[in-house]
Length: 364
Image (cartoon, rainbow, N blue to C red):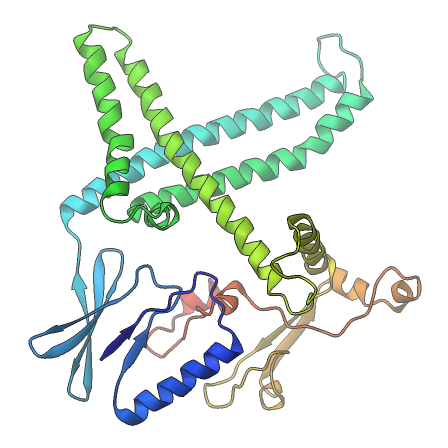
């Protein structure tokens, strides 16, 4: 059994490389050799070893291991436990600290929005402060409401992701900072527990009556610093991923790695506006594994018979109005299928008779 680790963080494989890989896979199949290629969606790269005359492929998960063992022509799949009560308790402490920090950020966001609307009432002259209506300040404050709400909502989304990453053992920070091994674990232990405890001990021995205030302030600074690094890396990878996607977008062949960042950002904004303001038709279909063959533009003719319903929103129907096209407000283009995030990342789940349920179907 050979182990071939090809984990591409971009999740894209060129047609030439895919053809070469398929040819090598067919050759290995004819020779009776089995190779495993890791997908980019795996949390960690797999490992291969030989144990008791059996070839084993190990895929680490959160607190367990998926083990694929080969004995002759048979493959035995099993799950092994790779965690303990102590590890769960330690990560629970990290998670609770992250949740408390998230709560403080939530209170800050709510207070900021509250003062924003309070400023609206003051600028409108509706309070007893004697301030008359200031149209400029009122419009400025009113127009800033969507920006503040969106920014604070994004901040809360990052805080929730930080809580999840804390429970997962800071897996994202491990990959982002390239601190493999125990370096990130020592940093997490110091930020969450060691430094706040040392501050509390020092002020207690100094007989300071406000030792708890200094301890809480130190704790928040440490956790918020770790959260800040987490947010910076998230934003960096999102922006870098967007630029990489624009460079590989087939409709903009003039863009390459020598294109300036400003031009790439312009194309990214254009694509976002097209996706947001274009009409959309939702098609619901149901096909089995034998009759479904996907194409780049959508379903094939054989699958069209399985279409169950088609629907369009009022705005989408409005965009198809012929007068808008005559007036030059809307440009009629060929319908293009929109792929979901799971399809783009090639992680779309398979639904089988054992994994199917009503909850998964209606809560999707």
